[in-house]
Image (cartoon, rainbow over all chains, first blue to last red; front, side, top):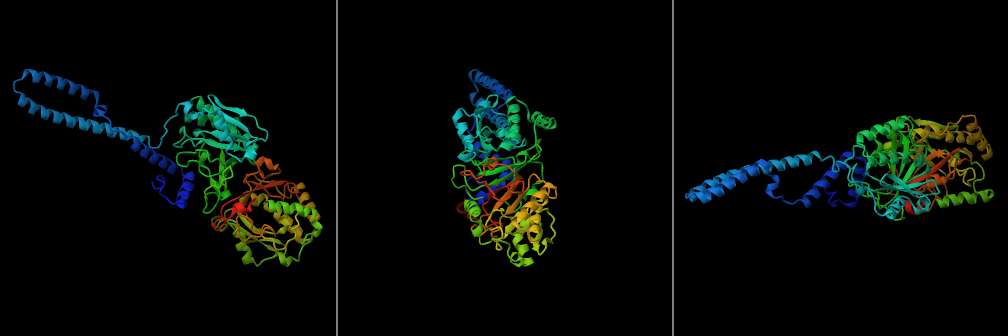
Length: 322
Length: 227
Protein backbone atom coordinates (compact mmCIF):
# COMPACT_ATOMS: atom_id res chain seq x y z
CA UNK A 1 0.00 0.00 0.00
CA UNK A 2 2.91 2.34 0.73
CA UNK A 3 4.04 1.83 -2.86
CA UNK A 4 0.57 2.58 -4.21
CA UNK A 5 0.28 5.63 -2.02
CA UNK A 6 3.62 6.91 -3.26
CA UNK A 7 5.10 6.79 0.20
CA UNK A 8 8.14 4.66 -0.57
CA UNK A 9 11.57 6.18 -1.13
CA UNK A 10 12.63 6.17 -4.79
CA UNK A 11 14.99 3.21 -4.48
CA UNK A 12 12.40 1.04 -2.76
CA UNK A 13 9.69 2.14 -5.17
CA UNK A 14 11.94 1.23 -8.09
CA UNK A 15 12.66 -2.14 -6.52
CA UNK A 16 8.97 -2.72 -6.01
CA UNK A 17 8.33 -1.71 -9.60
CA UNK A 18 10.95 -4.16 -10.85
CA UNK A 19 9.41 -6.95 -8.85
CA UNK A 20 5.92 -6.12 -10.02
CA UNK A 21 6.94 -6.51 -13.65
CA UNK A 22 7.81 -10.12 -12.95
CA UNK A 23 5.06 -11.08 -10.58
CA UNK A 24 1.60 -11.49 -12.11
CA UNK A 25 0.14 -12.34 -8.72
CA UNK A 26 1.50 -9.09 -7.30
CA UNK A 27 0.15 -7.16 -10.29
CA UNK A 28 -3.25 -8.62 -9.57
CA UNK A 29 -2.92 -7.67 -5.94
CA UNK A 30 -1.87 -4.13 -6.78
CA UNK A 31 -4.72 -3.75 -9.23
CA UNK A 32 -7.03 -5.11 -6.57
CA UNK A 33 -5.82 -2.68 -3.91
CA UNK A 34 -6.01 0.17 -6.37
CA UNK A 35 -9.54 -0.87 -7.29
CA UNK A 36 -10.57 -0.99 -3.64
CA UNK A 37 -9.11 2.45 -3.06
CA UNK A 38 -10.97 3.81 -6.05
CA UNK A 39 -14.20 2.15 -4.90
CA UNK A 40 -13.85 3.63 -1.44
CA UNK A 41 -13.20 7.07 -2.85
CA UNK A 42 -16.22 6.79 -5.10
CA UNK A 43 -18.46 5.10 -2.55
CA UNK A 44 -21.81 6.73 -1.88
CA UNK A 45 -24.21 5.44 0.74
CA UNK A 46 -27.16 4.03 -1.07
CA UNK A 47 -30.74 4.59 0.04
CA UNK A 48 -31.99 1.62 2.09
CA UNK A 49 -34.66 0.83 -0.47
CA UNK A 50 -32.00 -0.28 -2.89
CA UNK A 51 -31.07 -3.13 -0.63
CA UNK A 52 -34.58 -4.20 0.39
CA UNK A 53 -35.96 -7.17 -1.43
CA UNK A 54 -39.19 -6.64 -3.28
CA UNK A 55 -41.17 -8.99 -1.04
CA UNK A 56 -40.22 -7.06 2.08
CA UNK A 57 -40.95 -3.74 0.41
CA UNK A 58 -44.36 -4.99 -0.66
CA UNK A 59 -45.15 -6.37 2.78
CA UNK A 60 -44.09 -3.12 4.42
CA UNK A 61 -46.22 -1.15 2.00
CA UNK A 62 -49.27 -3.29 2.70
CA UNK A 63 -48.67 -3.06 6.43
CA UNK A 64 -48.28 0.71 6.16
CA UNK A 65 -51.52 0.99 4.24
CA UNK A 66 -53.30 -1.10 6.90
CA UNK A 67 -51.87 1.07 9.65
CA UNK A 68 -52.91 4.22 7.88
CA UNK A 69 -56.40 2.77 7.54
CA UNK A 70 -56.41 1.74 11.20
CA UNK A 71 -55.32 5.25 12.25
CA UNK A 72 -58.42 6.63 10.67
CA UNK A 73 -60.86 3.98 11.98
CA UNK A 74 -59.50 3.25 15.49
CA UNK A 75 -60.21 5.29 18.59
CA UNK A 76 -57.38 3.59 20.54
CA UNK A 77 -54.71 5.60 18.85
CA UNK A 78 -52.19 5.58 21.65
CA UNK A 79 -52.14 1.79 21.95
CA UNK A 80 -52.02 1.44 18.24
CA UNK A 81 -49.07 3.81 18.05
CA UNK A 82 -47.24 1.93 20.78
CA UNK A 83 -48.02 -1.38 19.07
CA UNK A 84 -46.95 0.01 15.72
CA UNK A 85 -43.64 1.13 17.25
CA UNK A 86 -42.87 -2.48 18.05
CA UNK A 87 -43.99 -3.52 14.63
CA UNK A 88 -41.79 -0.85 13.08
CA UNK A 89 -38.93 -1.85 15.28
CA UNK A 90 -39.37 -5.40 14.09
CA UNK A 91 -39.69 -4.28 10.51
CA UNK A 92 -36.62 -2.11 10.89
CA UNK A 93 -34.74 -5.10 12.24
CA UNK A 94 -35.85 -7.11 9.23
CA UNK A 95 -34.80 -4.29 6.96
CA UNK A 96 -31.42 -4.06 8.67
CA UNK A 97 -30.89 -7.78 8.30
CA UNK A 98 -31.99 -7.60 4.68
CA UNK A 99 -29.75 -4.63 3.95
CA UNK A 100 -26.89 -6.26 5.76
CA UNK A 101 -27.45 -9.47 3.85
CA UNK A 102 -27.58 -7.60 0.56
CA UNK A 103 -24.42 -5.68 1.34
CA UNK A 104 -22.68 -8.88 2.35
CA UNK A 105 -23.72 -10.61 -0.83
CA UNK A 106 -22.65 -7.58 -2.89
CA UNK A 107 -19.35 -7.59 -1.08
CA UNK A 108 -18.95 -11.30 -1.81
CA UNK A 109 -19.66 -10.61 -5.45
CA UNK A 110 -16.98 -7.95 -5.42
CA UNK A 111 -14.62 -10.42 -3.83
CA UNK A 112 -15.35 -12.86 -6.61
CA UNK A 113 -14.21 -10.19 -9.06
CA UNK A 114 -11.08 -9.44 -7.06
CA UNK A 115 -8.90 -11.28 -9.53
CA UNK A 116 -10.50 -9.59 -12.48
CA UNK A 117 -10.70 -5.86 -12.09
CA UNK A 118 -11.63 -5.92 -15.76
CA UNK A 119 -13.72 -9.09 -16.01
CA UNK A 120 -14.77 -8.75 -19.63
CA UNK A 121 -14.12 -6.74 -22.73
CA UNK A 122 -15.17 -3.12 -22.56
CA UNK A 123 -16.83 -1.45 -25.51
CA UNK A 124 -14.51 -1.27 -28.50
CA UNK A 125 -14.57 2.50 -28.44
CA UNK A 126 -12.72 2.43 -25.15
CA UNK A 127 -9.80 0.63 -26.76
CA UNK A 128 -9.64 2.88 -29.79
CA UNK A 129 -7.80 6.16 -29.88
CA UNK A 130 -10.07 8.73 -31.50
CA UNK A 131 -7.15 10.85 -32.62
CA UNK A 132 -5.35 8.84 -35.30
CA UNK A 133 -2.38 11.20 -35.24
CA UNK A 134 -2.07 10.74 -31.49
CA UNK A 135 -1.85 6.97 -31.96
CA UNK A 136 0.76 7.41 -34.69
CA UNK A 137 2.81 9.67 -32.42
CA UNK A 138 2.48 7.27 -29.51
CA UNK A 139 3.54 4.32 -31.68
CA UNK A 140 6.60 6.23 -32.86
CA UNK A 141 7.55 7.16 -29.31
CA UNK A 142 8.54 3.52 -28.72
CA UNK A 143 11.91 4.03 -30.39
CA UNK A 144 14.31 6.90 -31.00
CA UNK A 145 13.25 9.08 -33.90
CA UNK A 146 16.20 7.84 -35.96
CA UNK A 147 14.44 4.47 -36.08
CA UNK A 148 10.73 5.22 -35.79
CA UNK A 149 10.65 8.08 -38.30
CA UNK A 150 11.18 5.59 -41.13
CA UNK A 151 9.12 2.79 -39.62
CA UNK A 152 5.80 1.50 -40.82
CA UNK A 153 3.02 2.60 -38.46
CA UNK A 154 -0.06 0.56 -37.64
CA UNK A 155 -3.10 1.93 -35.82
CA UNK A 156 -6.04 0.08 -34.33
CA UNK A 157 -9.32 0.33 -36.20
CA UNK A 158 -12.71 -1.28 -35.71
CA UNK A 159 -11.70 -4.44 -37.55
CA UNK A 160 -8.06 -4.66 -36.53
CA UNK A 161 -4.76 -2.93 -37.13
CA UNK A 162 -4.47 -0.84 -40.26
CA UNK A 163 -1.42 0.63 -41.94
CA UNK A 164 -1.42 4.34 -41.27
CA UNK A 165 2.02 5.07 -42.73
CA UNK A 166 4.21 2.91 -44.93
CA UNK A 167 7.78 2.62 -43.73
CA UNK A 168 11.10 2.04 -45.38
CA UNK A 169 13.47 0.58 -42.79
CA UNK A 170 11.68 -2.68 -41.99
CA UNK A 171 10.64 -1.63 -38.47
CA UNK A 172 6.95 -1.61 -37.55
CA UNK A 173 5.69 0.60 -34.73
CA UNK A 174 2.27 0.26 -33.13
CA UNK A 175 0.40 0.60 -29.86
CA UNK A 176 -0.61 -2.75 -28.42
CA UNK A 177 -3.70 -3.11 -26.23
CA UNK A 178 -4.33 -5.04 -23.04
CA UNK A 179 -5.18 -8.33 -24.75
CA UNK A 180 -1.49 -8.81 -25.49
CA UNK A 181 -1.10 -9.46 -21.75
CA UNK A 182 -0.95 -13.03 -20.46
CA UNK A 183 -4.35 -14.69 -20.77
CA UNK A 184 -4.50 -15.00 -16.99
CA UNK A 185 -3.69 -11.35 -16.39
CA UNK A 186 -6.21 -9.42 -14.32
CA UNK A 187 -5.79 -6.58 -16.80
CA UNK A 188 -6.40 -8.56 -19.96
CA UNK A 189 -9.37 -6.34 -20.71
CA UNK A 190 -8.12 -3.08 -19.18
CA UNK A 191 -9.12 -0.52 -21.82
CA UNK A 192 -6.64 2.05 -20.52
CA UNK A 193 -3.60 -0.01 -21.49
CA UNK A 194 -1.50 1.44 -24.30
CA UNK A 195 1.78 -0.28 -25.14
CA UNK A 196 3.87 1.48 -27.78
CA UNK A 197 6.51 -0.69 -29.38
CA UNK A 198 8.64 -0.85 -32.49
CA UNK A 199 9.39 -4.33 -33.85
CA UNK A 200 12.64 -4.80 -35.73
CA UNK A 201 12.33 -6.45 -39.15
CA UNK A 202 12.82 -9.95 -37.74
CA UNK A 203 10.12 -9.42 -35.12
CA UNK A 204 7.84 -7.66 -37.59
CA UNK A 205 7.84 -10.83 -39.67
CA UNK A 206 7.58 -13.37 -36.89
CA UNK A 207 6.17 -11.76 -33.71
CA UNK A 208 3.89 -9.01 -34.98
CA UNK A 209 1.55 -11.61 -36.58
CA UNK A 210 0.73 -12.73 -33.03
CA UNK A 211 -0.50 -9.26 -32.16
CA UNK A 212 -2.49 -9.05 -35.37
CA UNK A 213 -4.02 -12.47 -34.75
CA UNK A 214 -5.00 -11.85 -31.13
CA UNK A 215 -6.45 -8.49 -32.05
CA UNK A 216 -8.59 -9.87 -34.85
CA UNK A 217 -9.95 -12.56 -32.56
CA UNK A 218 -10.71 -10.08 -29.81
CA UNK A 219 -12.55 -7.78 -32.17
CA UNK A 220 -14.45 -10.77 -33.51
CA UNK A 221 -15.71 -11.40 -29.99
CA UNK A 222 -13.95 -14.70 -29.30
CA UNK A 223 -13.58 -15.91 -25.73
CA UNK A 224 -10.17 -16.37 -24.15
CA UNK A 225 -10.49 -20.14 -24.48
CA UNK A 226 -11.32 -19.81 -28.16
CA UNK A 227 -8.37 -17.50 -28.71
CA UNK A 228 -6.00 -19.88 -26.97
CA UNK A 229 -7.23 -22.77 -29.10
CA UNK A 230 -6.91 -20.73 -32.25
CA UNK A 231 -3.37 -19.63 -31.46
CA UNK A 232 -2.34 -23.20 -30.76
CA UNK A 233 -3.87 -24.25 -34.05
CA UNK A 234 -2.13 -21.34 -35.76
CA UNK A 235 1.26 -22.64 -34.64
CA UNK A 236 0.30 -26.20 -35.48
CA UNK A 237 -0.67 -25.35 -39.04
CA UNK A 238 2.21 -22.87 -39.39
CA UNK A 239 -0.04 -19.89 -39.92
CA UNK A 240 1.98 -18.50 -37.00
CA UNK A 241 5.72 -19.01 -36.63
CA UNK A 242 8.32 -19.00 -33.93
CA UNK A 243 10.48 -15.88 -33.65
CA UNK A 244 13.21 -15.42 -36.23
CA UNK A 245 16.77 -15.28 -34.94
CA UNK A 246 17.45 -11.70 -33.87
CA UNK A 247 13.79 -10.77 -33.35
CA UNK A 248 13.59 -7.89 -30.89
CA UNK A 249 11.67 -4.71 -30.23
CA UNK A 250 12.06 -1.28 -28.72
CA UNK A 251 9.84 -0.14 -25.86
CA UNK A 252 11.30 3.21 -24.89
CA UNK A 253 8.16 5.33 -24.70
CA UNK A 254 7.36 7.39 -21.68
CA UNK A 255 3.88 7.96 -23.08
CA UNK A 256 2.80 4.35 -22.71
CA UNK A 257 0.64 2.76 -20.03
CA UNK A 258 1.59 -0.89 -19.63
CA UNK A 259 -0.88 -1.65 -16.88
CA UNK A 260 -2.32 -0.22 -13.67
CA UNK A 261 0.61 -1.46 -11.61
CA UNK A 262 3.48 -0.38 -13.83
CA UNK A 263 2.32 2.75 -15.62
CA UNK A 264 4.90 3.47 -18.30
CA UNK A 265 7.53 1.31 -16.49
CA UNK A 266 11.09 1.98 -17.68
CA UNK A 267 12.51 2.13 -21.21
CA UNK A 268 13.63 -1.30 -22.33
CA UNK A 269 14.37 -3.64 -25.19
CA UNK A 270 12.72 -7.03 -25.62
CA UNK A 271 14.19 -10.10 -27.25
CA UNK A 272 12.18 -13.04 -28.57
CA UNK A 273 13.14 -16.70 -28.84
CA UNK A 274 11.55 -20.07 -29.29
CA UNK A 275 10.94 -21.48 -25.81
CA UNK A 276 14.16 -21.59 -23.81
CA UNK A 277 14.89 -21.78 -20.14
CA UNK A 278 15.34 -18.36 -18.59
CA UNK A 279 18.51 -19.52 -16.88
CA UNK A 280 20.22 -19.65 -20.28
CA UNK A 281 20.21 -15.86 -20.22
CA UNK A 282 20.79 -15.58 -16.49
CA UNK A 283 17.37 -13.93 -16.28
CA UNK A 284 15.84 -12.98 -12.94
CA UNK A 285 18.99 -13.84 -11.02
CA UNK A 286 20.26 -11.36 -8.42
CA UNK A 287 21.93 -8.33 -10.04
CA UNK A 288 21.24 -9.63 -13.52
CA UNK A 289 20.00 -6.89 -15.87
CA UNK A 290 17.95 -9.49 -17.73
CA UNK A 291 14.39 -10.34 -16.74
CA UNK A 292 11.87 -12.74 -18.19
CA UNK A 293 8.76 -11.07 -19.54
CA UNK A 294 5.69 -13.00 -18.41
CA UNK A 295 3.77 -11.97 -21.53
CA UNK A 296 3.87 -15.38 -23.21
CA UNK A 297 4.80 -17.48 -20.18
CA UNK A 298 2.47 -20.47 -19.78
CA UNK A 299 0.51 -19.22 -22.78
CA UNK A 300 -0.20 -20.87 -26.12
CA UNK A 301 2.64 -19.04 -27.88
CA UNK A 302 5.88 -21.08 -27.72
CA UNK A 303 7.94 -17.99 -27.12
CA UNK A 304 10.37 -16.81 -24.49
CA UNK A 305 10.76 -13.07 -24.14
CA UNK A 306 13.56 -11.32 -22.28
CA UNK A 307 13.61 -7.69 -21.15
CA UNK A 308 16.65 -5.48 -20.72
CA UNK A 309 16.19 -1.95 -19.35
CA UNK A 310 18.07 0.87 -21.01
CA UNK A 311 19.13 4.22 -19.67
CA UNK A 312 17.03 6.66 -21.68
CA UNK A 313 13.57 7.20 -23.02
CA UNK A 314 13.18 7.47 -26.75
CA UNK A 315 13.26 11.25 -26.52
CA UNK A 316 16.76 11.11 -25.04
CA UNK A 317 15.80 12.00 -21.48
CA UNK A 318 17.23 9.95 -18.65
CA UNK A 319 15.13 7.14 -17.23
CA UNK A 320 14.90 6.28 -13.54
CA UNK A 321 17.63 3.91 -12.39
CA UNK A 322 16.51 0.30 -12.15
CA UNK B 1 31.78 3.55 -28.18
CA UNK B 2 32.29 6.02 -30.98
CA UNK B 3 35.74 6.54 -29.62
CA UNK B 4 36.36 2.82 -29.94
CA UNK B 5 35.01 2.76 -33.46
CA UNK B 6 37.00 5.82 -34.45
CA UNK B 7 40.11 4.27 -32.98
CA UNK B 8 39.52 1.15 -35.02
CA UNK B 9 39.01 3.13 -38.18
CA UNK B 10 41.99 5.37 -37.56
CA UNK B 11 43.94 2.20 -36.98
CA UNK B 12 43.36 1.08 -40.54
CA UNK B 13 45.15 4.12 -41.85
CA UNK B 14 47.83 4.16 -39.20
CA UNK B 15 48.46 0.45 -38.87
CA UNK B 16 52.14 0.86 -39.61
CA UNK B 17 52.43 3.27 -36.70
CA UNK B 18 50.64 1.09 -34.18
CA UNK B 19 52.50 0.64 -30.94
CA UNK B 20 51.59 -3.04 -31.07
CA UNK B 21 52.77 -4.17 -34.50
CA UNK B 22 53.27 -7.82 -33.57
CA UNK B 23 52.75 -10.30 -30.81
CA UNK B 24 54.54 -9.55 -27.55
CA UNK B 25 56.30 -12.31 -25.59
CA UNK B 26 53.69 -14.80 -24.40
CA UNK B 27 54.36 -14.12 -20.73
CA UNK B 28 52.96 -10.63 -21.12
CA UNK B 29 49.56 -12.07 -22.01
CA UNK B 30 49.46 -14.54 -19.13
CA UNK B 31 48.15 -14.03 -15.61
CA UNK B 32 48.42 -15.97 -12.36
CA UNK B 33 45.52 -18.46 -12.36
CA UNK B 34 43.91 -17.19 -9.17
CA UNK B 35 43.77 -13.62 -10.47
CA UNK B 36 42.49 -14.73 -13.85
CA UNK B 37 39.69 -16.82 -12.34
CA UNK B 38 38.50 -13.86 -10.27
CA UNK B 39 38.75 -11.51 -13.24
CA UNK B 40 36.83 -13.92 -15.47
CA UNK B 41 34.07 -14.25 -12.89
CA UNK B 42 33.76 -10.47 -12.57
CA UNK B 43 32.18 -10.42 -16.03
CA UNK B 44 28.78 -11.40 -14.65
CA UNK B 45 26.95 -11.07 -11.34
CA UNK B 46 28.01 -13.76 -8.83
CA UNK B 47 24.56 -15.35 -9.15
CA UNK B 48 25.69 -16.38 -12.63
CA UNK B 49 29.48 -16.56 -12.57
CA UNK B 50 29.88 -18.48 -9.31
CA UNK B 51 28.36 -21.57 -10.97
CA UNK B 52 30.07 -21.05 -14.33
CA UNK B 53 32.93 -22.97 -15.84
CA UNK B 54 36.05 -20.82 -15.71
CA UNK B 55 38.82 -21.09 -18.26
CA UNK B 56 42.25 -19.49 -17.96
CA UNK B 57 44.92 -18.85 -20.57
CA UNK B 58 47.88 -21.18 -20.48
CA UNK B 59 50.91 -21.50 -22.67
CA UNK B 60 49.08 -23.78 -25.07
CA UNK B 61 45.66 -22.18 -25.02
CA UNK B 62 42.73 -21.91 -22.67
CA UNK B 63 42.38 -24.55 -19.99
CA UNK B 64 39.48 -25.32 -17.70
CA UNK B 65 40.36 -24.08 -14.23
CA UNK B 66 36.95 -24.61 -12.61
CA UNK B 67 34.17 -26.89 -13.77
CA UNK B 68 30.78 -25.21 -13.72
CA UNK B 69 27.23 -26.39 -13.48
CA UNK B 70 25.01 -23.74 -15.08
CA UNK B 71 26.25 -23.88 -18.67
CA UNK B 72 27.91 -20.46 -18.58
CA UNK B 73 31.63 -20.19 -19.32
CA UNK B 74 33.66 -17.25 -18.05
CA UNK B 75 37.05 -16.35 -19.50
CA UNK B 76 39.33 -13.37 -19.94
CA UNK B 77 39.80 -12.69 -23.62
CA UNK B 78 43.02 -11.21 -24.95
CA UNK B 79 43.70 -8.55 -27.56
CA UNK B 80 43.62 -10.94 -30.51
CA UNK B 81 39.84 -11.19 -30.11
CA UNK B 82 39.62 -7.62 -31.40
CA UNK B 83 38.96 -6.72 -35.02
CA UNK B 84 41.74 -7.84 -37.31
CA UNK B 85 42.29 -4.24 -38.38
CA UNK B 86 42.48 -2.99 -34.80
CA UNK B 87 45.77 -1.25 -33.95
CA UNK B 88 45.58 -3.00 -30.59
CA UNK B 89 45.31 -6.52 -31.96
CA UNK B 90 48.55 -7.43 -30.15
CA UNK B 91 48.19 -5.14 -27.10
CA UNK B 92 49.44 -7.35 -24.28
CA UNK B 93 47.65 -5.27 -21.63
CA UNK B 94 44.11 -5.90 -22.87
CA UNK B 95 41.87 -8.09 -20.73
CA UNK B 96 38.28 -8.73 -21.75
CA UNK B 97 36.38 -10.62 -19.02
CA UNK B 98 33.37 -12.36 -20.58
CA UNK B 99 30.78 -14.87 -19.43
CA UNK B 100 29.24 -16.74 -22.35
CA UNK B 101 25.76 -18.11 -21.91
CA UNK B 102 25.30 -21.81 -22.79
CA UNK B 103 24.38 -21.09 -26.42
CA UNK B 104 27.39 -18.80 -26.85
CA UNK B 105 29.63 -21.23 -24.97
CA UNK B 106 28.79 -23.84 -27.59
CA UNK B 107 28.88 -21.65 -30.69
CA UNK B 108 30.93 -18.49 -30.04
CA UNK B 109 33.52 -19.54 -27.49
CA UNK B 110 35.03 -21.96 -30.03
CA UNK B 111 36.00 -18.91 -32.10
CA UNK B 112 37.92 -17.52 -29.13
CA UNK B 113 39.62 -20.84 -28.55
CA UNK B 114 40.51 -21.16 -32.22
CA UNK B 115 41.91 -17.64 -32.57
CA UNK B 116 43.90 -18.18 -29.39
CA UNK B 117 45.36 -21.47 -30.57
CA UNK B 118 46.41 -19.83 -33.83
CA UNK B 119 47.90 -16.81 -32.03
CA UNK B 120 49.85 -18.97 -29.61
CA UNK B 121 51.12 -21.02 -32.54
CA UNK B 122 52.86 -17.88 -33.69
CA UNK B 123 50.74 -17.16 -36.75
CA UNK B 124 50.43 -13.68 -38.22
CA UNK B 125 47.15 -11.79 -38.39
CA UNK B 126 46.64 -12.80 -42.00
CA UNK B 127 47.34 -16.41 -41.19
CA UNK B 128 44.96 -16.34 -38.25
CA UNK B 129 42.26 -14.86 -40.45
CA UNK B 130 42.81 -17.54 -43.08
CA UNK B 131 42.72 -20.21 -40.39
CA UNK B 132 39.37 -18.95 -39.13
CA UNK B 133 37.90 -18.82 -42.63
CA UNK B 134 38.97 -22.39 -43.27
CA UNK B 135 37.65 -23.54 -39.91
CA UNK B 136 34.21 -22.21 -40.81
CA UNK B 137 34.40 -23.65 -44.31
CA UNK B 138 35.23 -27.14 -43.10
CA UNK B 139 32.74 -26.82 -40.21
CA UNK B 140 35.39 -27.18 -37.59
CA UNK B 141 33.72 -24.11 -36.09
CA UNK B 142 30.00 -24.54 -35.34
CA UNK B 143 27.12 -22.49 -36.65
CA UNK B 144 25.85 -19.76 -34.37
CA UNK B 145 23.09 -20.84 -32.01
CA UNK B 146 20.00 -18.63 -31.56
CA UNK B 147 20.05 -16.82 -28.23
CA UNK B 148 23.83 -16.70 -27.93
CA UNK B 149 24.84 -13.81 -25.69
CA UNK B 150 27.58 -12.74 -23.30
CA UNK B 151 27.86 -10.74 -20.10
CA UNK B 152 30.61 -8.14 -19.97
CA UNK B 153 29.93 -6.30 -16.73
CA UNK B 154 33.38 -6.23 -15.20
CA UNK B 155 34.83 -2.99 -13.96
CA UNK B 156 38.23 -4.67 -13.63
CA UNK B 157 38.58 -5.34 -17.35
CA UNK B 158 40.63 -3.37 -19.83
CA UNK B 159 39.17 -3.58 -23.30
CA UNK B 160 41.76 -1.37 -24.96
CA UNK B 161 43.94 1.65 -24.32
CA UNK B 162 41.21 4.19 -25.03
CA UNK B 163 38.11 2.55 -23.60
CA UNK B 164 39.67 1.10 -20.46
CA UNK B 165 36.95 -0.96 -18.79
CA UNK B 166 34.37 0.95 -20.86
CA UNK B 167 30.81 0.40 -19.53
CA UNK B 168 29.04 -2.75 -18.35
CA UNK B 169 27.21 -4.28 -21.26
CA UNK B 170 25.66 -7.37 -22.74
CA UNK B 171 26.56 -8.71 -26.17
CA UNK B 172 24.23 -10.51 -28.54
CA UNK B 173 25.28 -12.63 -31.48
CA UNK B 174 23.31 -13.03 -34.68
CA UNK B 175 24.22 -14.29 -38.15
CA UNK B 176 25.87 -11.50 -40.15
CA UNK B 177 23.34 -8.76 -40.63
CA UNK B 178 23.07 -5.07 -41.29
CA UNK B 179 23.30 -2.98 -38.14
CA UNK B 180 19.97 -1.36 -39.06
CA UNK B 181 18.12 -4.62 -38.44
CA UNK B 182 18.56 -3.84 -34.75
CA UNK B 183 18.57 -0.07 -35.13
CA UNK B 184 22.16 -0.17 -33.94
CA UNK B 185 24.38 2.91 -33.94
CA UNK B 186 21.44 5.18 -34.81
CA UNK B 187 21.06 8.45 -32.94
CA UNK B 188 19.53 7.80 -29.54
CA UNK B 189 19.66 4.01 -29.92
CA UNK B 190 20.93 2.02 -26.95
CA UNK B 191 22.19 -0.68 -29.34
CA UNK B 192 25.74 -0.58 -30.69
CA UNK B 193 27.57 -2.76 -33.17
CA UNK B 194 30.81 -4.31 -32.01
CA UNK B 195 33.41 -3.79 -34.73
CA UNK B 196 34.89 -7.24 -34.41
CA UNK B 197 33.58 -10.30 -36.27
CA UNK B 198 30.86 -8.97 -38.61
CA UNK B 199 31.92 -11.14 -41.50
CA UNK B 200 35.60 -10.34 -41.16
CA UNK B 201 35.98 -13.25 -41.25
CA UNK B 202 33.53 -14.72 -38.71
CA UNK B 203 29.95 -14.86 -40.06
CA UNK B 204 28.62 -13.26 -36.89
CA UNK B 205 27.34 -9.79 -36.07
CA UNK B 206 27.68 -8.76 -32.47
CA UNK B 207 25.42 -6.14 -30.93
CA UNK B 208 26.01 -4.51 -27.55
CA UNK B 209 23.59 -2.98 -25.09
CA UNK B 210 25.04 -1.05 -22.12
CA UNK B 211 23.46 -1.75 -18.75
CA UNK B 212 23.30 0.42 -15.70
CA UNK B 213 25.35 -1.55 -13.16
CA UNK B 214 28.62 -3.39 -12.90
CA UNK B 215 28.56 -7.05 -11.95
CA UNK B 216 29.13 -6.12 -8.31
CA UNK B 217 25.92 -4.09 -8.29
CA UNK B 218 27.54 -0.67 -8.25
CA UNK B 219 26.10 1.91 -10.66
CA UNK B 220 27.95 2.71 -13.86
CA UNK B 221 28.31 6.03 -15.59
CA UNK B 222 26.90 4.54 -18.77
CA UNK B 223 25.62 7.78 -20.18
CA UNK B 224 28.89 9.66 -20.53
CA UNK B 225 30.95 6.75 -21.78
CA UNK B 226 28.73 4.69 -24.04
CA UNK B 227 28.35 7.22 -26.83
